[in-house]
Every structure is written in C-alpha cells, then in structure tokens.
Length: 339
Image 1 (cartoon, rainbow, N blue to C red):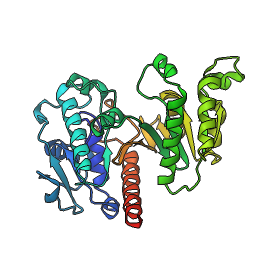
Image 2: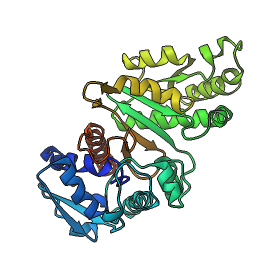
Image 3: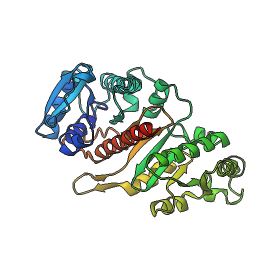
C-alpha cells in the first residue's frame, strides 16, 4: 500500500479499478483496509474494499479490492501530506508482511507503493529505502536497484548513500557484481545476450586519468573480468554518451556508479510535468531489486506529499510495475516447469 499519508493508497485504488489488472494476475493489497476505503473515495472509483485476514480468503474478483488487513492505521489521526510515525510504521509493516508472504511462497511476486524514508525512521526502522529492507529480510548480501522503462534499463553501483560514500563504493568487486546482476536481470526480460554499457565515475570517464583514477583502477578491471566471463559489456563511457545511446537502443542496460547519475537521465526521459495542470502528465518507469530470492517491483516515484489526498495522483507507474511483476512471475514459473 505504501505510506498511507502519501499517494500510495490512491494509486492502488486507481490501479485496482482497471479490469485489465485482474486479467494479468490475482491482485491483493497488503495494508490497512480503512485507509484503502478512504483512498477509494479520494480516487473517486466505483469499487469496494474487502478486509481479509489471510491470502487464502481472497476472492480476486474485479470490482472488489481484497486487502490483507494489518489494521495499523488510525484514520482519525491520519493527515495526508504529513510525516508521522504511525504512517511510517504502517508502511514498514506492509513491506515486511509482503516479504514474509513471498518467502513462504504464499504469493508469487511483490509490488511496492511509495514509502517515506523519514517516516519509517520516525517509526524506529532505520533503513534508507525499500531495497535495503528487502535485502535485510531476505538475508541478501549482493543486490542492486534496476530502473526500467521500455528499452531503457539502469542499474546502480550504489543508491541511498552520501555522494562521498558513493565514490568510495566504486570498487572492482562491486562493479563486477552489478554488471552480473544486470546481465541476469536483462535475461529475465527475454534478452538472450544483453549488451551492457558502463558509466565512468569522473567527468569524461576521467579522460585517461586526467580527472581521476577510479576508472583505471576499479571500473576497467571489472569490465575486463566481466568480458572474460562471456558478458557483452562496454565502457567506461561518459554518462552523457552512455544514456543517449541506451535510449536509442544501442545498449540493453546501463550501469550507473551512483544514485543521481542513473536517476536523473532516466526520469528526465520518463517523467513529464504539466505546468498548467500542476501535476505529472506522464510517469513511466518502474524499479526492481535484483539479487534477492523473491520478485520485487516498485513504482519509480515517491509519496508525493504535495498532492496526497487531492485525487490527482497518476497510477501509471504502479500499473507498469504490476505488469512487470506478473510477467516476471510467469516467466519464472515457465522456467521452473522446464527445469
């Protein structure tokens, strides 16, 4: 469901109001049923909300949202667009529950609505984001975030750390692992031999050492080892060259060295702001966590507190996330049946 003070419940209601979702999968929202009832009113959609105590009680019928009800939101205390420990706790408990359900194989895939990092920290859970929560509760050491929209796929060597820490994390072993994760991730989408491009860390990918040493000492050795393993990979390339080529289809996936290096070009292409309407006209793209033993796909935007409760949130990214999760789950089942 995401943070109940944000747009997560609203976009969840709008997504579940589309009959197409029920043809793709059996959707179940994990969160608070009363918060979802309120979200249905905000979204102005003609659907019902049904509280259930366990997955086996779900009916998966279009027109009614099955909510695995955690009963952890006091509606009278909920303020849209406001940080609170209550909302942070509700968001965290929902994420933890879907991880448990997936590990127990009671569900096939998980799709996460937006959480607010400050709110979950107010609630006493000190994680920088979804990716790290999933890694912790699945016991995963090597993992990474992947952004996806169409043929643009961007993975990160580091995400939710300071820029100073991000530079320190550019090490050969980590860069190599992220290249491997991207290669495997692209194959999940049916790309048999992915072509991968790797960004440099420094301006102009250091211009042969003029602007830094990380390319020569850490990134290039990782690329060379990946090639020796049979991976089709190029780089390090200046990001302003890498991403336009990837958008044009030359690369199947890109490795960014840190959060903003990957997020800015991705969102510049996939998010479109309508200034006259004062809202996003288009929000394309999702993110995935690679390396973990369960399927996790998410919206690629935040809680949008500035528009929460107004009924104008765009569900496009969530709908894409559900489609990707359903496709990956189906491919996984097919692969397991063949094996």
